[in-house]
Length: 78
Image 1: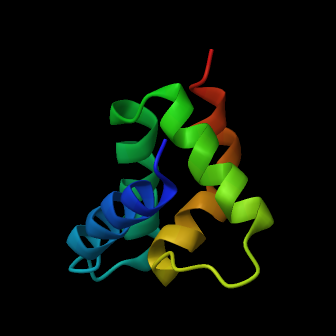
Image 2: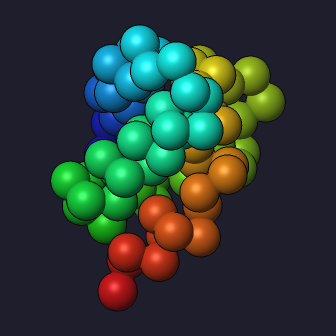
Protein backbone atom coordinates (compact mmCIF):
# COMPACT_ATOMS: atom_id res chain seq x y z
CA UNK A 1 0.00 0.00 0.00
CA UNK A 2 1.23 3.46 -0.86
CA UNK A 3 0.88 5.31 2.44
CA UNK A 4 0.94 8.74 0.80
CA UNK A 5 -2.07 7.76 -1.28
CA UNK A 6 -3.91 6.40 1.77
CA UNK A 7 -3.19 9.59 3.70
CA UNK A 8 -4.46 11.67 0.80
CA UNK A 9 -7.68 9.65 0.60
CA UNK A 10 -8.19 9.75 4.38
CA UNK A 11 -7.68 13.52 4.38
CA UNK A 12 -10.25 13.88 1.59
CA UNK A 13 -12.74 11.97 3.73
CA UNK A 14 -11.88 14.25 6.63
CA UNK A 15 -12.39 17.34 4.47
CA UNK A 16 -15.87 16.12 3.57
CA UNK A 17 -16.83 15.68 7.22
CA UNK A 18 -15.31 19.05 8.27
CA UNK A 19 -18.58 20.66 7.17
CA UNK A 20 -20.38 18.88 10.01
CA UNK A 21 -20.75 21.40 12.86
CA UNK A 22 -20.76 18.72 15.59
CA UNK A 23 -17.15 17.54 15.93
CA UNK A 24 -18.15 14.22 17.52
CA UNK A 25 -20.51 13.46 14.64
CA UNK A 26 -17.79 14.39 12.13
CA UNK A 27 -15.25 12.16 13.85
CA UNK A 28 -17.72 9.28 13.93
CA UNK A 29 -18.48 9.85 10.24
CA UNK A 30 -14.82 9.52 9.30
CA UNK A 31 -14.49 6.39 11.43
CA UNK A 32 -17.65 4.91 9.93
CA UNK A 33 -16.42 5.49 6.39
CA UNK A 34 -13.06 3.88 7.10
CA UNK A 35 -14.65 0.91 8.85
CA UNK A 36 -17.24 0.31 6.15
CA UNK A 37 -15.44 1.05 2.89
CA UNK A 38 -11.73 0.55 3.43
CA UNK A 39 -10.32 -2.94 3.21
CA UNK A 40 -8.38 -4.46 6.06
CA UNK A 41 -4.92 -3.83 4.59
CA UNK A 42 -5.69 -0.17 4.02
CA UNK A 43 -6.81 0.35 7.62
CA UNK A 44 -3.85 -1.58 8.98
CA UNK A 45 -1.42 0.49 6.90
CA UNK A 46 -2.99 3.74 8.06
CA UNK A 47 -2.77 2.68 11.72
CA UNK A 48 0.84 1.52 11.29
CA UNK A 49 1.62 4.97 9.91
CA UNK A 50 -0.27 6.71 12.73
CA UNK A 51 1.58 4.66 15.35
CA UNK A 52 5.04 5.26 13.89
CA UNK A 53 4.84 8.79 12.48
CA UNK A 54 6.74 11.51 14.28
CA UNK A 55 5.19 14.24 12.16
CA UNK A 56 1.86 13.10 10.79
CA UNK A 57 0.42 14.61 7.64
CA UNK A 58 -3.04 13.38 8.55
CA UNK A 59 -5.67 16.08 8.93
CA UNK A 60 -6.55 16.78 12.58
CA UNK A 61 -10.09 15.41 12.19
CA UNK A 62 -8.76 12.19 10.66
CA UNK A 63 -6.19 11.74 13.44
CA UNK A 64 -8.90 12.38 16.01
CA UNK A 65 -11.23 9.85 14.39
CA UNK A 66 -8.51 7.21 14.19
CA UNK A 67 -7.61 7.74 17.83
CA UNK A 68 -11.13 8.04 19.28
CA UNK A 69 -12.67 5.22 17.27
CA UNK A 70 -9.69 2.87 16.96
CA UNK A 71 -11.38 -0.10 18.57
CA UNK A 72 -14.47 0.23 16.38
CA UNK A 73 -12.46 0.65 13.17
CA UNK A 74 -10.06 -2.18 13.93
CA UNK A 75 -12.90 -4.33 15.23
CA UNK A 76 -14.17 -4.45 11.66
CA UNK A 77 -11.04 -6.39 10.64
CA UNK A 78 -12.51 -9.82 11.32
